[in-house]
Image (tube, rainbow, N blue to C red):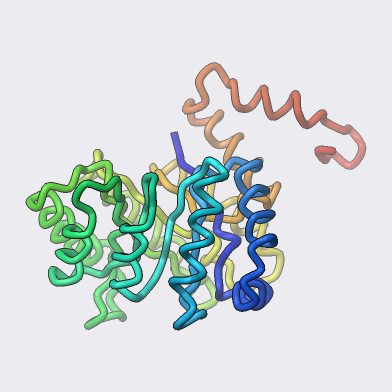
Length: 272
């Protein structure tokens, strides 16, 4: 089955950044609770824009997430921030995004000893960002997987991120992602995959329309960890119906439960 990661608490959002800067942890608590209630197994934290206040914020936010019964997924471009996060968590944690750098990977592996840590492997080449072909991505993923397995990381703790890029940048970015994901699942069937699907629709109107269809295609290709706004109803509906259609909803339990909790209204053909 897929794993949902709620991505509302991202400092790239101006409203969220303002709350983070003010250390408004009541707001954070409400958002965490709402995402958990809507099915998020992990709560993503991206506080990079806080700069020097990143770690103090993460320390309290992680405490809130763990005390709420959930788990944290922390994204940062500062390797030492991720090391401190690994030290402070009491539960399983996901950290990323780490490009293929043996030096950085070794630092994370050392910090992870005795901890339950999953690592997001960012599949991009900073030296050649123009080549985003599925074949190039597969080569990078192979290096990453081989290195992590050789150093004792379990396959289930490796999360390959094929990288979603906005359609606004190039109209084929959705197709490239799906083809890359398909190659990853064929070559590394026991290694997990993760992606922030909301990125595809950045800058476009009616983003939910693209996201709700994109998530169905990604699930069919085998995506394991889906990062998105779990409070976006249309997307959740797409996830539930897709899992049912492709036979991954045992005895249609999730679909039937969803229908019972959301009685159909024949007016306008919508769910009330």
